[in-house]
Image (tube, rainbow, N blue to C red):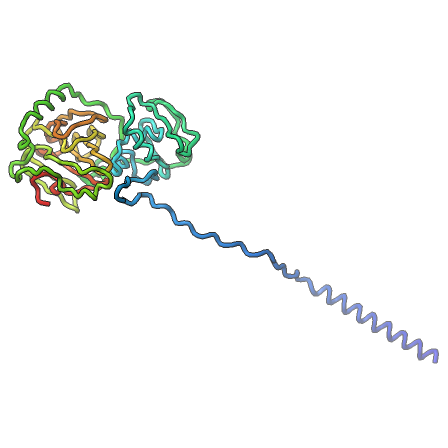
Length: 354
């Protein structure tokens, strides 16, 4: 009896030992980590924000031009001013950009503040930041001072370089876009006043080309297309035969009017001279007049320029003398630009078919 009880205890001990070993081996085999479950609620997906358009859509009664402009590859202050109807020097003043007016890709340019300067006296050349512009780091300084770049300019921006002049096609958009912007020097204009008075005393019929129809009293431009700008009354910039017509394609960005050396070139509408010089290959000695927020006019190949940048001119005022600068014959190349784009001058000048 005693021996049988001893065997039972021994058998139970072995069973217990076997079970313990099995549990130990099972624990050692389960070496994979337990899964981790993130029980936090998923983050809500933010709605996608559409990028704002770089150019404002023209609406009746509103300025079609954007408040800001982001510099793109190939831009110059001159090309931006030409596209949106600003004097490039006014853009430079509004954004504290000193000569030689270098801008960088990605740089934000304030255009809204340029409008506020158009009606103020800028003879002192002092740049004042408008209130509420959002830039508290703008420093007021003279335009001609050796000032560091504006705080809004990216520190690692890439300088915009002009293409070689030899690659520019006359009257092309490319020529206007990549034109180098240099500090303009005033052209001698000692005889401007006398010449203008003498020209104004001539009959208005002399401002038409020889084969033009009788003058009309109103421009052919659609007043609604000018937004909040008043419709302009245009006159012919000189008299002579039209030897080159406008084309939507190719290099016909305006019209060519034949004439004689030194023949008067007149402002086709009142406005402000925003460019006077000869920096654009293919245009020769060039004058550009800003008439309002919508329209510019271009006068190329002059022999002598009689106005300077920033000067206000009246309709019919003599601004230059016809010549053949940067071309093979004496002529005036004349363009009208609406919202920066070339349009057919024949639709705006008196005596033309609409």
